[in-house]
Image 1 (cartoon, rainbow, N blue to C red):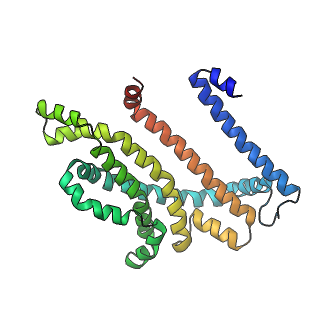
Image 2 (spheres, rainbow, N blue to C red; image 1 turned 90 degrees about the horizontal axis):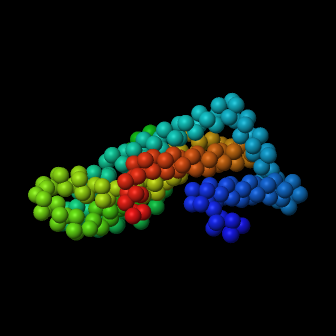
Image 3 (cartoon, rainbow, N blue to C red; image 1 turned 90 degrees about the vertical axis):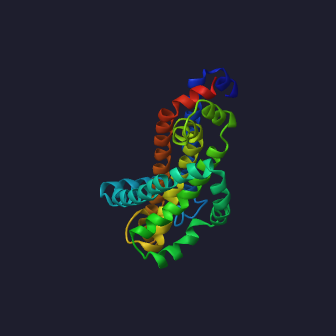
Length: 266
């Protein structure tokens, strides 16, 4: 198999490797079904995968799962987009302006290690149990990967690029727009990609402790009502959604960063 992959052209090799990855997932699901059907695991806690599929189809048909998922996805995207809009521009300025970075870097490093779920009680106390609390928690969780990656991308800029800008007489705004932002964009995209699944994780967590709807509430209620197949169906839906969002992000990134990929392959 390794020899087959090695002799396959690059574009075909990527497709083959992806197909093998899906085949491995199917193998794991088959083993799940066989082990539970054989009685090696208690089906009360881990139902056969086919039961989970049945529950998933039933919940999709009556729209209870899609509606819950849509609510959660909307919340996740609001918090995620707020983090992008409110943090990327100041992060670029922080990385570009060294004195300001030195002033604020201790505060960033002090707040960054705080686990986002630990913020939920404080957000509930100061903001209240409402939509803005959930948006803030997602914003906080997504913010630091975006902030730190953007600052690092700006600070790791090749000094020769800045020297060239000075030689050509570019002003600060033109230097930021034409040199700093393009050079930092791979780091920015990396931060956005890391933050995307974090948004889903935190929206579920926030919903479980302070909401009446959403996929987090759906999973929690199914677990409390001992609807185990429905619980696994909700978790599987989240996994599938995360995978699809990652694929979508890859496509968007590939289009936006085509210039960078071409330059890095030279």
